[in-house]
Length: 638
Image (cartoon, rainbow, N blue to C red; front, side):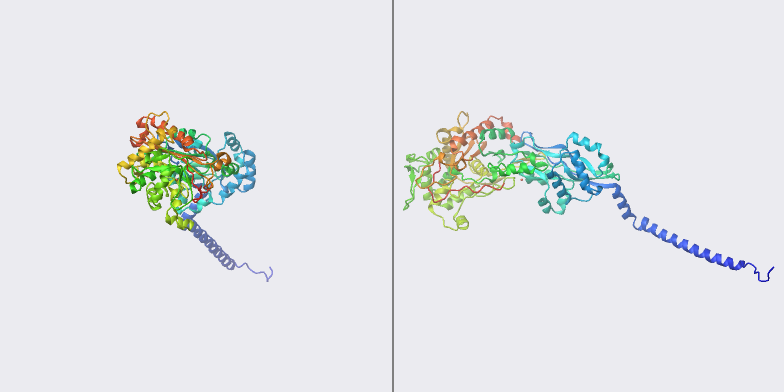
C-alpha cells in the first residue's frame, strides 16, 4: 500500500452529520412553530372573524318584508289588497358580466329600455348581495323560460312577492291613493331607522291614505338566515324571524255611495263630498276625472304618465282637497247666520231689490243675477230661497270684513280642515291684513260685496264647503273630517274642533231659508221626488270677470271659462244625518246642474237602514286660483 494512503476519519464525519442534523431539526422546528402560530392566529385569535367571512359565502341574512295593511270601506269592501306577483331579480355580486346577462334575459322575457334604466338606478342604492328587481309581474311562460335557462343565469332569481292592488281602480284613486317604488328623493329623506324598516321593501305610500298612514300600513320588517350554494341559489332557511304585518284600516267611505256620486257627475269635471253629520266621517270623496292607481304600483311607464300629466282634464289633480274655487252663493247661509249673530240684520230685516245695488257715493253698479230683481221687500228666508244678491250686498255694506272674516274662519274657511290626507290646500277668506300683505293694498267696500257672495279673493275647496255645511246642519258643532273609522278594529273617536255659537232662533231661520231653497227656490232639483226634507243652497260662481254693464253670454265663452256650478245640502232637516257639497266645473247652473247630483247622493244614503249608515260608530301642480277682478261688476247667480 502507498504510504500516502490515509485512513477514513469517522469522527469528523459524525461531527459533520450531527451539525447538519441539528440545523435541519432547528429549521423544521422553526417552520412548525410558524405553522402552529399561524394556525393559532387563524383558529383562536381570528376565529370569529374568519368564521363570519366563511358563513357569508354560504349564509346570507335576508330581510323579510311585512305584509302591507289592507284598507276596507265601512261595509268591509276591500279597497287596497295585496296580490302575489313574480319579480325577476338580480344579485350583482353573483354575476361576472352584467351586460351579457341582461342581453340574455332580454331574449327570454319582454323588457324595454325603461326597465333596464330603472334597474341600473336601483343598483346604485342597493345593499351588498341584495336582489334588485329588473322586471315585475312575470307571466307563467316567462317564468318557465327562466327556469329552463337557470344553469346559464347565476345570480338571477324569480322572487315571489305581494304587490298592492286596487280592486276599485279609478273609484278611490284620490282618497285611498297608491303606493309606488321607493325613489331617490324618498331615500334622501330616510333616517337610519327608516332604512332598517324598509329593508326588502320596494314600495312606499305616495299619495292619499297610503301616504298619510304609511307608518301604520307598512308594518315591521323581519329577517331570515339562508344557506346558498356557490351560484347564489337558496338551499335552506336556517333561522327566521317573522315580520309584523301592517295595520288594517276601515274607512268611513261607502263604496256604493261613492259610485252613485261618480255616476251622478256623468261626464262633467268636478267633485262631490259627503260627510256624516254626527261624526265628521267622510262618506263619499269624488274627484273627477280620475285615474287607475294600479299603473303606479310597480312603476308607471313614461308614456302612461305623460298622458295623465298632459291631459287638459288633469286627472291627477285632487279637486276635493286641492281645488280652490270661488264658492259663490253657497256662502249665503253662513253669512246670513253671521249677520244675525252680529246684529247687522234681524228676522224682520227687509230689503228692496230692483235688480242692482250701489254703494253710497259710488257710481258703480252691482247687478243681481236676476236682471229685474226679486221684489220690493225681501227678507232673509226669501233672500236665501231666491239667492237674492242685493239682500246680501245690503247686509255687507252695513257690516265689515272683520265680522265676515270671523264667521267664515269659525266655519273652517281660509284654513286647512285637518282631514287625515296629505297635500290639503287652505283656500282663502280675505281680511284687511291678508289683502295688505298679499296685494299691498287697502280694503275697499266693494271687496266686502264680493266676499259676502263668495267671489273676489274668496277661494274654498269642495271639502271645506262640505265641512261648512255639516257644521250648519249640526247647529254649530264643527267636527274634524276623518277618512279612517277604525285601525285594526279599534274605532277612532270623532274630534270636535270647536262650536259656533248662535241663538236657536237664528239657526231656525237659516234652516228654514235653506229648506225653502229646495222647496220653492233655486235648488228645487235637489229635492224632487224625495220623501224626506232637504235643506240646500245653490251657487254659480264666475271663472272670469265680465265688464261693467255687460251681459253673461255662455255661447261667447270658451267651455273652460264658463261659470262653475255648486250646491250644498243636508238631510233630513229635522235630524240631519248627511251633508253634501257638489262642484261641477264650468257647469254654469248650480241649481240646474249641481243640485241633481246632490239629490242622487242624498237619496241613496237616506234609503239605507240605520245600521248601515251607522257603520262601526252607531295621507300635477294645482290649478291657478280662479278669481275675478274685485273691482269689476259682480254677477253671481244662485
